Length: 235
Image (tube, rainbow, N blue to C red):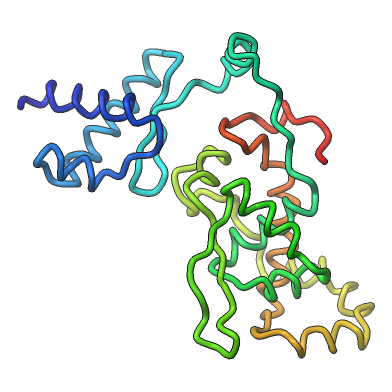
């Protein structure tokens, strides 16, 4: 097939699938190199953006997906009679930030950073498909480790984790969180000693600082991307 025909084939595949499609899979089907498929997808992506169409193509790691433009969310909801999705709670946004910036991590790591039990919140994030189990640590008890999903990337409107807002420097984080270490007390020390993995001080401080950025960035997360300004109060 000629290049124009191949580009049309990629466009048809993305439209028909609806869900993210790996570039490697398309390359196998179309008997092309993965790099050439990525180049075609990026070319299509630019064409849609330049034309100002109601459809756009987004990249998530090495996968591509066709979706609607954010500015048409309201008329789409009205036509399809869709309710506004429930936004993440502050606790869920915090846990998601900790996992996103430190993955893969165990539940005990997250609980050390936040200082409270996170079982229910993690279960909720799993149900929303924002995080997933990435395996188990080869330690006593073999605890599960968690990381983010492609759905997480789509909800944040980013192509990869490299596009997450940068974390503050360690020195700034230590200054911002110095008062926390003065008030933790013996209870936190006892709790940390029972966990499987220890949280480095810098990682904990950096994750806490990232929480505020994530809380402002996380939006409706059940199937569409929205801007933070559209967000109502979270539950």
